[in-house]
Picture 1 (cartoon, rainbow, N blue to C red):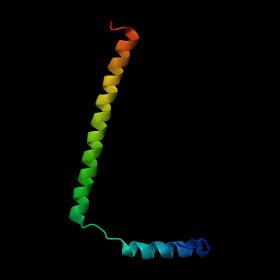
Picture 2 (picture 1 turned 90 degrees about the horizontal axis):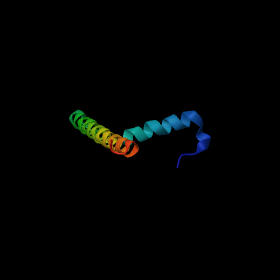
Picture 3 (picture 1 turned 120 degrees about the vertical axis):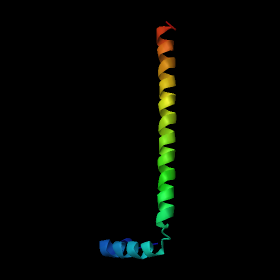
Length: 67
């Protein structure tokens, strides 16, 4: 556990050391995973939009009494 007594300089030195231990994805894999994330975001957006429209219609029917 890093000590809080190291100060900002020690913090950034620790960050630099930790970043060297990270296994970074290859550019092709990063591009593919970015596509997956964007696809999931689009899907969730569509699902929430449809849900919102259904709730809106149901609430209008409830408030107006089906007229």
